[in-house]
Image (cartoon, rainbow, N blue to C red):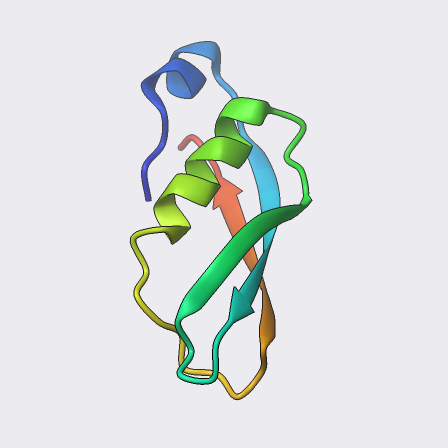
Length: 72
């Protein structure tokens, strides 16, 4: 997962939930933030990361994908 350097420098953490719309083959057609982390930079990073996924094994046409940003 891509954790933005600016978010790391600022100590930002958060939980983003993305709503993915899939075609019949499981390919992601669109993605949107269903629940924000409260930090636009983390929300945007989650959306950028999901663009790297080619397909999801699912029979559903919509999938909620939780993304956690945590600094350890």
